[in-house]
Length: 320
Image 1 (cartoon, one colour):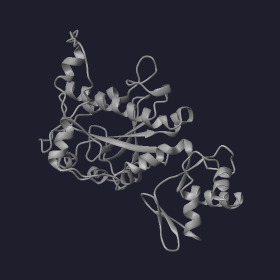
Image 2 (cartoon, rainbow, N blue to C red):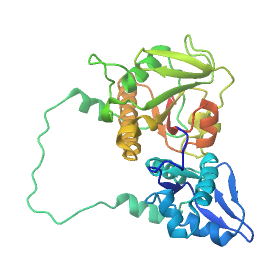
Image 3 (cartoon, one colour):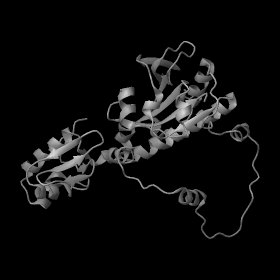
Image 4 (cartoon, one colour):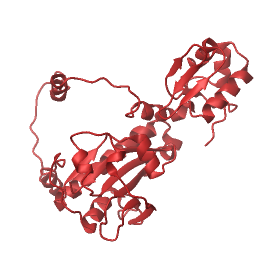
């Protein structure tokens, strides 16, 4: 939905960090820079107020500038994606958590291991040992593990592939899906990257319709799965095997119409549930599975043809 700075409900939020220069201020997005000319001091004063808590009129009052001037500037910035409404704050976090943001701190191996082993352990009293009633699910997940890096790839049958997708996000008797979803919006968008034929599937990009139990070809150009992920020793060989890769994205705008920015959290929960179902199904089928969170968002968005409202979240390798 186009942003309208004249709407009294609109509370502008800067989409990314602003970088002052001698004669302008830049808003640095993942794929471009938006330049704001004029007085850098005045632009900086306005941008500092774009925290999503003020209306356009309140921004103008605080900056001591004419409302029309501020409204025109924010309209231009909104068209270029440099400003979003407060209910779209999730877009900023999605961008800032991407591989292109540069917002990270590298730790040495010793520090990483120390953090990995640390746990939240508050003061406690009595302890009671669980006495679990056996379940078939527990027996399956006892064997669950991620496919090892450098492991030997094996072919994936169309039946196995179908079984994993159906377990991940297929329709159940109630009409819902195999995983819970906030408000039953079922916001996940699931694609399949096929590098070589798998049963009736020819190479290309396929969209999974969980409600109908079908795959639809949406891109027939050759797919190079490694190009959609950050290179890493843990998964490079798995992606290069030529086996299918499931891509999980989330159409956050739909649940956001009800839950606002909390919809982003709910989408991550839903994606995690679907990922675990892929592992459970893969384990039962004897099919190696590995989830990969290092998605190159820009490359994935272009390959899958995703609109701005849909955020790519993770990939899942099969058979390697």
